[in-house]
Every structure is written in structure tokens, then in C-alpha cells.
Image 1 (cartoon, one colour):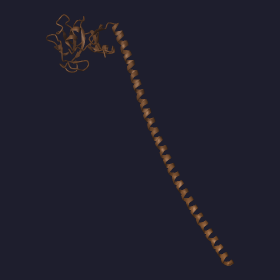
Image 2: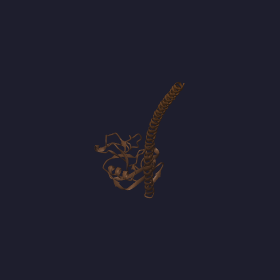
Image 3: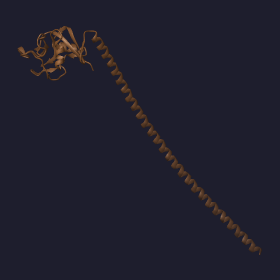
Image 4: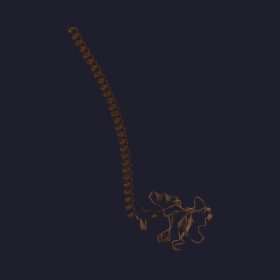
Length: 224
């Protein structure tokens, strides 16, 4: 009996030891799987975090670029507005001086009849330097106004580039002319500029072609 009891006790201990060993193995395997799972999750979190950081960086650069572009556009607009303001101020000052120095107003333009006498080419430059042009006449109403001014003076019309093709100083063709009967006649083949000569004639028949005379200058500044 003692031997049988001893054997049973020994077997029981072995079974218990085997169970403990298996339990330890299962526990170790579970811990290992848990650690691997935790490592995988941590890795995924790192990847997601890195992707988030990259996304934030890209978005920041895009927003920064858009802001800098918008700032550049605003600065260009500010500079343009400043330039336009300065130009308007300059024109206002110029017009103020013109009104006090012999310029007269008619419709939407200002006119000035000089006291000096110049050639047609000199007159054109003279007017350009005064922010105006040799007078361009575009209507009967304007022609009648011009005709009422005293003196003999150049107007901004010539056929210097092509004989018989009369153009205004702004490059536009002549559509409405007020020539004296028989004019323009290009006397001696050298009359290529238009003048208002016949102040005592019909206002609509007062132009003549000339070239080398020194005449008064009539300039026109069109108000913008």
C-alpha cells in the first residue's frame, strides 16, 4: 500500500508539474503574441503620425505659398494705385497751371493758342511737351469753335507720309475736312501740313495746306 500511495503521489506531482509547465508555455506564448501585437500597433501609430506630420507640413507650405502670393498681388495693386494717384495729382496740377496760363475750355477738352510761332514739326513737339497734341478737329461744332480763335495756326493734320493721305497726329484718317475751295493743292509739291488760315472765310472753308511757314500753335488737351 505504501508503494502504491507513493507511486500515486509521484504521478500526481508529475501531472501537476506538467500542467504548470504547459501553463507557463501558454502564458509565455500569449505574452509574446501580445508584445508582437503591441509592436505592430505602435508601428502603425508611428506611420500614421509620420503621415500626419507630412500632411501638416505640405498644407503649411501650400498655405504659406498662397499667403505670399496674395501678399505680392496686394503689394502690386498698392503700387499701381499709388502710381495712378500720383499721375492724377500731376494731371490735376498741370490742368490747374493750364487754366491760369491761357487755356480755354470747350466741351471735354482744353485748348491753348500760343504766342510763339513754330514750324509744324516743332509745333507737334511743343504740344506733346505740354501734355497735349496739335488740335484734332472731329466735328463741325469744334471747327466753329476753333474758327473763332484769332490768328493763323497749325492744326494736327498732315500727309507727310503719303501724298494725299491726310492723317491726324493720333494716326487716324481724315474723315471730315474744312478746306478752302481749291485746297489742298500741294503747291510746288511741298505742302504737306494743314493750317487754319482763312479766318475771315466760311468756318467750314478755312483750311489750307502749307509746309515751311512759322505759325502759331494751337494745342488740345482732352480731359480723361
